[in-house]
Image (tube, rainbow over all chains, first blue to last red; front, side):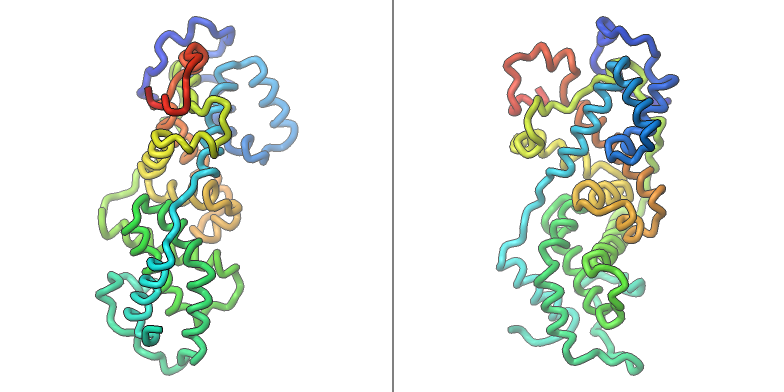
Amino acid sequence: MTGKKSAGAGQSRSSPHHHQPGEGRCLDILRQLSAYIDDELPSDICAELRRHVGVCPNCEVFIASLRDTVKLCRSHQAPQLSAQERAMMRQEILQVSKLGAPR
Amino acid sequence: MDSLDSGLMRRPPVQPQSKKPTPPHNAQEFDRLYRDHVDLIYRYAHRLCGEVEAAKDLVQETFLNAYRGLKDFRGEAQISTWLYTIASRACMRMRRKRKGEPERELSLDEFVPTSEGEFRLQIPIDGLTPEQALQNKELREALDQAINKLPKKYRMTLVLRDMEGLSAKEVGTIMGLTERAVKSRLHRARLFVRRELSARGMTQEDHQSSEDWQPGGFGS
């Protein structure tokens, strides 16, 4: 465990959760979060994880933030080529490959 | 295709192979391949490279290699999977040439929160849909920067799985990995991006107390 940040100073003031961060069940949860988000866990493990999250605000927030991260990645838009750029790139590829004459 | 390691413009002309002559219809096949897939591969390249010129170089390298390998393509994979594979290999070669430095491995341990504060860091999208949240320039740039900071093999896994929407099996085929290895890399990549994004955002307590927070306030 080599976490370096100490962001969010004073967050321990309101949590009813008694686990120590980075220990025990929370650590197990952390390892399985992507499988949980992707709905790839067996139902019994999934149910156990949900039970833990129900009593662990830390893990609940962590899962929500990871889920949001994945949603943002899935919604990320990349720019598109213009018709002119497409044509120019095709031309360059053909020239380099000696494939054919310009059309 | 592994022999195609030199730069695009320095490449010697292709010599016809005596055993497998290039079919005369190859130019038409190539045109169809290019027309149908250039946008897909450019999108992938841009997500991998993070900038326009490098993405264009990668697209050119990909289609040049694809043309040269077209006659050997047996249709055992989807053509898009085949092109993703060529692009991924070309990207690894291009980046290796540029930097020449070993890739950093991401350890799961480095993402283990050591305080409640780290557990409770949030992505500040505040009830918006992801599409709405990404209208915010700061958030969009933060996401791009987080992805660009990923070591390339993790970035490639994240881009293929979460951004291009391929299955873990397809990503494994493209990257030459088992599904288990894909999922392991993907998990670390997601944790990395989550940490990068949330470190620039707000904790839950801050978030809840900021009643007038707007998407434009990201990073404040």
